[in-house]
Amino acid sequence: MTKRRSQHWFGGQGKDAFIHRSWMKNNGLPDDAFDGRPVIGICNTFSEFTPCHVHFRGLIEHIKAGVLEAGGLPLEFPVFSCGESNLRPTAMLFRNLASMDVEEAIRGNPMDGVVLMAGCDKTTPSLVMGAASCDLPSIVISGGPMLNGRFQGREIGSGTDVWKFSEDVRAGVMSEQDFANAESAMSRSPGHCMTMGTASTMASMVEALGLALPGNAAYPAVDARRSRIARMTGRRIVEMVNENLRPSAILKKEAFANAIRVNGAIGGSTNAVVHLLAIAGRVGTELTLDDWDRYGRDVPTILDLMPSGRFLMEDFCYAGGIPAVMKEIGDLLDLDVLTVTGKTVRDNIRDAENYNPEVIRPRDKALTPSGGIAVLRGNLAPDGAIIKPSAASPALMKHRGRAVVFEDIDDYKARVDDPALDVDEASIMVLKNCGPKGYPGMAEV
Ligand code: FES
Image (cartoon, rainbow, N blue to C red; front, side):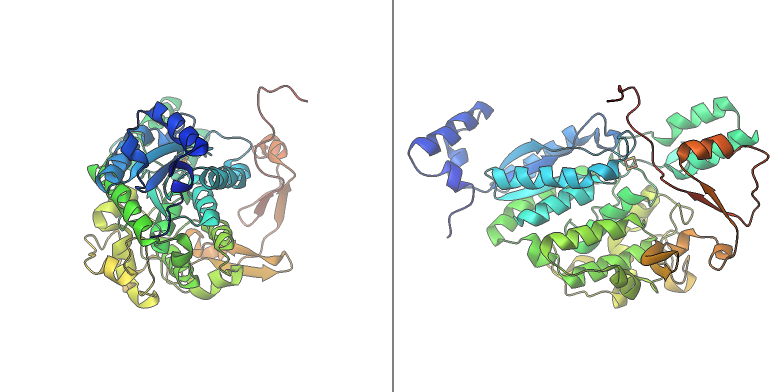
């Protein structure tokens, strides 16, 4: 057997091995921890500023238990945590920085395989990008979505309902007190946003790509099955190291084509486009904007989740999750693609069932017949633009209207409520230079 990577630090005799082992004994590790067993890095994006990950301290204990049970040595390491709700100017600005942090931490430390703990929007792509560049055996465990929001007898979704409530307050049909009460009712458990926003989309994408165990995307953060899958993930990464199963063997073009089709079926976020293109680039798999059109445009959206539809991630879990969706569209997928289970997609979804056809609809009752990402080109977007047809009103699919342009967010805030603003229902409102400006409370330098 070839020498494990970690043994280049911990194996043998002499000064260097002494140094590497001796300092590690600060962790309380016994001598046999360095006997050549797989060293598993657990990449933790815990941060109290990333509220979608506040439960990661508990979740990691299940991963560690799984690694130990399978005969590995689990070692946790922190990386930059780009949480969506707080980080300014925008978490997207830090995705590549975070991926560099992940890549250098993996490359520079004595580990043989990696568990990637992701959840909030940009954490999944940044971790996968960094790990894919290193190409050590890697597996993703998502933190899982929050429980459904519940307010005044009905279910409310992260993000989706905030905009509605805010408009209702402005229109005088919702009181300030109810608005304040809804704040606590929306985020009522640990976990990431429970609509089909970017976090749920990317958790679904890593499962569809074959980088996470089946069922990973939908178990709520507080469901005991989330802890169980964390434990199974810990066990599986040790086996993956022994099998030398690396991301480059999984992230083939066919796997991306599957993910693009699943994205269409779930009505996934348009942000998946930029993230999957970036991940593909890290393993040298050619993937283009046109591939999204080619593979995904005509896939029907069968998952009835907000913001396109009615339900939330907790309902998706009970309906069967991603394995049930992949089974529903199995004829559109390449079922022979290899996954982290060491088995094919076909094997992984063989026993999947759809337990709620209201949530995961039959194809002939699809939410949108052509639900994938559509790539648009024209004089306004010569390099291409994308649209998610399932989230657009039918009336917008072909539309002529006057553009009402705001130069930036300050211009928008100053003019949008002005009764004199020359706008009507056919107008297209355009916000240029969007995104919050600067860092509040910091001195200008
Ligand atoms: Fe973290 Fe939405 S703010 S997933």
